[in-house]
Length: 401
Image (cartoon, rainbow, N blue to C red; front, side, top):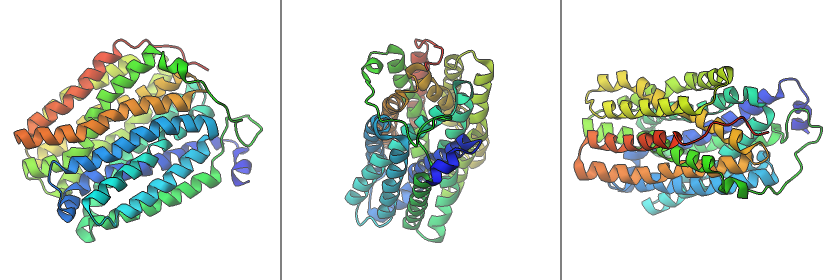
């Protein structure tokens, strides 16, 4: 009843965007908490440096599965139920992880958190895509995707200080409780459907995803995103540990570097979406340019050694690591259409997140084998380079209704 009454108010689509953004911010924060907490968790649970990557891989493995299942479920039962339900369980998993008795239990809980946290992405994107028309969608998606970088900012600003004042368990319990509170707000105030629809929810449909599987451009877009997220989440997952272990940077300073890395994207993501909406000339070529810039920025960052150098370079690296995402994400409903937006978003993001699944273990192995900060960042740069090449073969299209 609350959402039904609220949805009749002018500008309700901005309420939808706010709640979707808050939900995605919390799952991004929950995911990003691992980077600044990893060393403390490893010491507390007796996990080796290379073994820390297994925790992140377990999370992202669950995340990939839930993107595929969550996207299809969103199109069948409605985005509101999927968004609020998945965040509620993911928050409960965060709360439980704060009391992990062993490494094995912690890995299992990380997998559980990822298994539910991934569903909110496609549900949120479906709501944003249905409530915002094509001419406003790039801007709305840009705002929505500030959640990924804002989650990284908050985690790296707050977690090292919470660990210093309390312990790593406290931060996970706190974020779990906040996540569950946001889930309740989404359940109360969100409404499925698009502006102008009279009903409480869109009638359940059984969309046929088979055309998506045969869409060459969507497949290439998925593979390109795999490479892009290899670089972004490889950095988010490993940068704190690499700076601490590879360059002797203290944990709070390492967290500040990642804050500087991510905070620039909070402002710039909506601007990129707005600029492409205004120009109306496609999003593929700007995305290629951003990914090539990201490659260069990663290689340069890998040659730095002092905290001052890291702090200066971090915002420039962040531009490359995040500004491609509004462009790639807005291309998905353009290619697939609104009716299959949830399924397409989930499937595309599942391919993208496979980069996040594999990169923690690979980078950990590279660093442990070579002991080289530069080699680890060269391995990270290989992902966005491949992504830029693949995007060259994707055709820009007019948005599908």
